[in-house]
Each structure stands twice: as structure tokens, then as C-alpha cells.
Length: 240
Length: 240
Image 1 (tube, chains in turn blue, orange):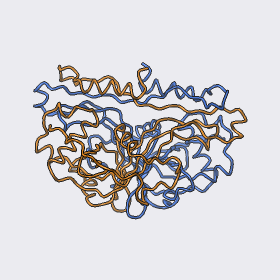
Image 2: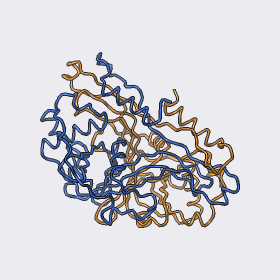
Image 3: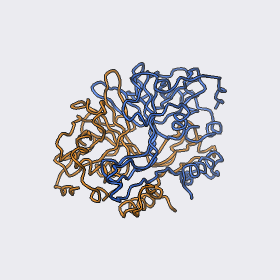
Image 4: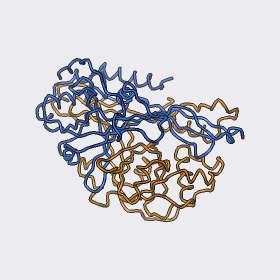
């Protein structure tokens, strides 16, 4: 597959630029840093896409990728699906919401009321565009594979025209977005602290297991997959 | 806090009972087993709630709990939030969508096109009801705590009236729901298999770390939290 284009100099807009993505609840947890958003989008494996399907919203888990080197100054989020998925192809021009969340801990407070979770979450709202250009679609597919296993796309055979045609890709600009982060212990009532009740938190991490080779292959596990497993263990606090 | 009521005999409806929750794409991945849905809802820590906020859907990560012992034959899903969250309180009577997803693996196929993920996902569509009865709200709060740490709610002081009043709870019946599961290696083109290219998958698991006590407490980590951490390591494949 072809190599993604090199990065162009850019000056992205700050997060929360519009009323509909301004965080109104829990303002102290809002993050106005695009680097933090990009890091979360790199860490997370799945996004939840919300589309209006007539009389109600539908929320579906989707594979995704982010392109920070394309023509959009703030970057583009690509959601990947089948051309046969009507909810996806019907979204052309509609405003959709894409939310990405990672749970980082259970906040086991001293009272039920103050129980919470540590998490990172990004909410992106924007106009959906069905990608029709074969080159852009192929690039989105390339980035989706590399999102799962960095460096892997370059090791695979190029996608065929038929494969690219059978793939639907929805593009959403990373312009209107907000991020919330909670990363601390419990915030308890003074009376519960003074009563000597225990409070704390429990970290939650994700771990990648050893790669399992398909029974039909005799080939060794490739280096890109081995690197991904090793990184997934170390960076996510497993293996210790 | 009071103990939840015992289970009543019930005969739940099968999954996918209506056109809007019938799986049309990837039918082979559909699961028509409520026990599998209940297991996923027990495993998962966060749900994604989709609500219509006027001109677009909004998708937000939420803590949740499931009550299989209440008056609703199929069970009730409770979403927990602040009374100050307008999107939540504005949902009364509206049809919402609650989606719960766990990623179980990266499917590292022999071609970009066949890359996929192993996952379990439940999509619930139904009318949202703001819970106003203080007893039902207190029970939903109890179940939300026990969802994070089984057995913990009974060890905490009862919630105060003020705390219950400051909590907004959205109830959605677990009636219209569909589940999809992918749990296998790559499904590759024969030519790619014959070419000897490697294909396989990488398991993804969640691990709970050791509990971190709040600096303001001298009390030992309680048994319910220790049990949760131990179960989170063993059942999720970590610690080996």
C-alpha cells in the first residue's frame, strides 16, 4: 500500500470552539489540548458513532482512524464500514457524533454517591462525508490498519479496486470536539473521611495477549505484530 | 443500603424482537441469547448513550447498571448522571440508544481488507424514563456501585435524601436489544492463504491493578475491593 503523505505545517484550532461542543457539565474535567485528544484517539481501539436513523439515534461501535496529515487543518476522523450498512451510507451530509472513551480506573469512594470512574473521553460532532475518492478511501483503509498495528499496512499487499469499492468510509472533521478526563482518587465528603472509612481507586488497564497464528499458516508472527504486542503490554502497565 | 429484592420467575422475550433492533448487517454475528447479553452488560464498565439534542445525536459515555429483578420482565438498564446534565433530563419520553461494547481482540488478517476486531456489542433502543421514585433511584444507585464492585454497596453508609435528589437516573427497558459477537481468527481470501502470508489475531483483555488507597485513609483495603481486583485479574486473563 502507498505511504501516507508527509505532514504539512498547520495551526489547529483549540478544542471546544463551538457552543455545541463546549463542556457545560463537569467543566473542571474539560481538557483544551489537542495533543491529549490525539493521544486518546491513538490509544483507543473502538469509537461509538451516533447517527440519526429517523425517529431515534443509533449508536454503533466502529473501527476508526485519524489523519492529521490531510487537507483539513484540524485532522479528519475516518469511520470504516461496509457499503451495505445503510445507516452509514445514509449519513452523507448529516451531523453525526463520534465518541471515543477509555476507562482508566474505578473510583471506589467512601459513599455510593461519590463512586465514579477515571476515564478519558472525546466527543466529536460534525458533518459526515462519504468518501468517494478511491485514493482517499485506500488511505483511510491504510490508516485503519496502522491504527490497530502501527507499521502493518506497509507489509500487506495493496487493496484491490474491488476491496476499496466494497468499503464505505465516513469522514468527520476533527474540528468541533471536546475532551474530558478524570484521573484522580475519590473526592469524598469530609464527614466520611473523618469517620475513617476507606476510600481509594482501582486502576484499569488494557493488555494485549500473545499473537495467535491462524491454523492455516506456518509463517512466523511478523515483526509489526510482535512490536504491537510488546508495546501493548509495556505502555498499558501489564506484564509487570 | 437495603438489599435488592430477590429474583422473580420470569420468561423474557428473545433478543431482536422488533425491526429496529433486528441485525441486518453481519447476521452471522448476531446472538439471540439473553444470557450472553447479560454477561456482557455485567463485564462492561461503561455504556455509550445516544440522545437526540435537536439537530444532531449526542453520544456520551455513562456509568450504568442492570436490574433483572424489577417489575420489567426483560430487565431495566439504568444510566446514571447529574440532575444538572440537561441532555439527560431532556430525554424523558424520548427514544434513546444505549450501546455497550467490549473489544476482545485485534484480527490481524493477511490483507488490509480483512482486518477486523473481535468484540461483543449490545445495542438497546427504547423509551427513556426519568426515575422519580426515591426508592427506585436509591436502588439504581446501589446497583451502579455493585456493578463496579460486587458486594460494595451493602458496606457503605446509606445515601442521603440530598444525594439521591442530586442524582438523575434514566431507565431504559431491556426489551428491544440486539447483540453481535465476533470471536475468531481472520477470514481471509484463499489466494492470500495459499501465498503463505501470516494471519492471526491478538487477544485484548482488561486488567485491574492493585487498589490505591486515598492518602487520607489509614484503613485497610476492604474485602469487596480486594475480591474485585482478584476477579478482574483472573477472569480477564491477566496475572499469568
